[in-house]
Length: 298
Image (tube, rainbow, N blue to C red; front, side, top):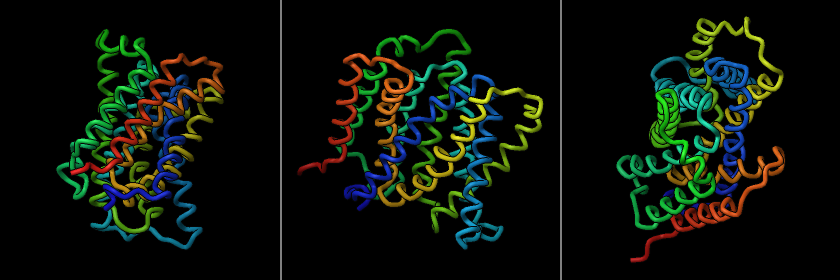
């Protein structure tokens, strides 16, 4: 079953998503420095939809005919793209990347609970519970006590933290629902989902933000394009494929491994020097992944 057997392809897809999504917090932070959140999300899903639609038709595929076949795409577009993208981007105007990473660890924990009730073969086991607990402790250690000290605070800060948590919960629900309701070609499914998300978000951004009046920095514009092409267009295709192959609980391991990408980006690009606790946290995360992938012995 997908809940027990993992192929090499599953692990390669997982690692690709780790790199793509692990970089998105940094690019979100760059984009939000001179663009409003709704415009960032509109640009992100708009670029992603355009890229995938061109690929769909260039490869001879076609979108499904209008009708009841589209309702799963509408559900996933809202729960998995439009709503969480906005919640997390809006929250990152206030919430630091480190704290956002800790809050996003809520996603795999809630995925385990949802999958236990809704997905056959994804029931809670002792090893999964222990593994995810170890992984969460690793994230806390990796991000450091200073990030945890940022919890709470004034009303805006609390609401921003809850916004990021809301995005994490949306991703958890998306992981389970995708396995249940998305069928057919993964590229067509990804393109259809992002097209629906664009039809929802882009008009809202044009009406509320009037982006033609904005004067974004070049770095912010480039960050939105990157977010659209790599962590959204390409990653959505890989995401649908991994969910179908390995299940939502396995896919949610991305949220334990992504902080390692943030550490490496800080070290290699930003010139940061991680403390020893960062490497200890990474070891805990990898140990947690190993534990939750082991079968329980009876």
